[in-house]
Amino acid sequence: MTNVSTSAQPALERIPLAQPFQDQKPGTSGLRKSSQQFEQPGYLESFIEAILRVLPGVQGGTLVVGGDGRYGNPRAIQLIARMACAHGLKRLVLTTDGILSTPAASHLIRQRQAIGGIILSASHNPGGPDGDFGVKVNGANGGPAPESLTNAIYACSQQLDSYAIASSEAIPLNAPGNHQRGELHVEVLDGVHDYLQLLEQLFDFDLIGKLLRSPWPMAFDGMHAVTGPYATQLFEQRLGAPAGTVRNGKPLENFGGGHPDPNLTYAHDLAVLLLNGDDYRFGAACDGDGDRNMILGQRCFVNPSDSLAVLAANASFAKGYAQGLAGVARSMPTSAAVDVVARELGIPCFETPTGWKFFGNLLDAGRISLCGEESFGTGSDHIREKDGLWAVLFWLSILAHRQCSVAELMAEHWQRFGRHYYSRHDYEGVDTDRAHGLYNNLRDRLNKLKGERFADSSIAIADDFSYRDPVDDSLTEQQGLRLLLEDGSRVILRLSGTGTQGATLRLYLERYVASNGNLQQDPQLALSAMIAAADNLAGIRSGTAMAKPTVIT
Ligand code: G1P
Ligand code: ZN
Image (tube, rainbow, N blue to C red; front, side, top):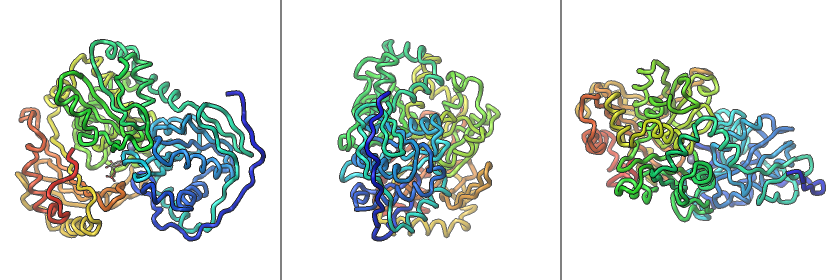
């Protein structure tokens, strides 16, 4: 990496923009739209211009840029390089082939003391010319930009009449190297290396390697997305698992036509392998950009809310967490399984709105060590994003220490803490007016619901969740409709902030059964009375004009 390729001082241009793009308001995780929308002349340029004008420290700063390998990544990376040059950045950190998972990006930002990063991904949404594209902005702490920053970026995008760009040559991304473009230094590095080093500090690779080299077949599904190269290097090359352990490990610009979301619907092949057969002891998958994870055992699906609780209860088996946890946090719709563990451990447990950004302050302030969401996201204070492969290694550490199966570990966990039966029903692609109508209708009735019968219990509290951040005291309102029942059960209704077609309505259901109750029911059966009552109360099937949910988790 000693050769620095230089090019003549690039000319700077200022290109006019006809009019602001009104739909550039970032959602739960950045700006996510169809690839076609992003291909409108000036669309991507306008949003990048807004980022580079608003992000603190651009003049003379370092920026990390990469993505999940989806369609549109190479164009966006080269565009950002030229615009970074025009905006006075000092250093740009890129990766070979532009491949950079969201957790690895978070780590690089922190390690390089960058002012932040731009991650080119629409996470678990399908990719390709007819799929989705996305731009996520992360701040200097390595985490998703807080709402104050995304609001400022949006406001700026609405005022723009031009963008600045240098006429510099394209950066070769096929190999590591250093390149100079005017005042901008561009470093292209291997996006996998530093991230795996971080994971090695947290987990005992010798112990996990022993397990993976023993007759203990594991299957990892990269879903043709960003984690393939990371997982192949980690599991097969570094830890010695047999070749072929990583499936669908080559990133493809359309994810092989799949939907890179690790759940029972979209990671169907892996689910069949683990749940219907006995050839594998452990299975895992990650999403498009590598921050989500699904954990499966032999004939056993681990609910993500339970996964967080299991990690918290067994943290002493992972080297990086053996000294104890400062606290834990979960998003509001995530089940309270981790709350029960936290109570027993005597550590604080925080409940935040949906979206990883809400964990940022708690992590930065050292108030929590682990956190997670029901949507297959788990993570810790090692970075400021959720981390798919980290979660897989955490599970492998526990199983290597405990020498038991996933199903045994779950059964033991429920024996000790009781079980939170849990399910999320998604109604995707609902007509936007219908979805909002149904939602607003329930919201308007909330204050009349207290005391009403609901399934086997009655409603103790009905509200629209709001969150007061304990670190900076900021207030976030209207984060989801909650029905809290007398018996501790919960029903939550939210509208998704990440969909790109119509509206997605999410119904979350949770019922607690203490350790002396029936712990081995099918969740849909255990929740059936609540599912019917929720439909009755909110008119979900009639309101959405859908007979059943599109995805049940
Ligand atoms: C979804 C998940 C949420 C997660 C987000 C980004 O957001 O529900 O937990 O943080 O994706 O991965 P939603 O579509 O519900 O707004
Ligand atoms: Zn993701």
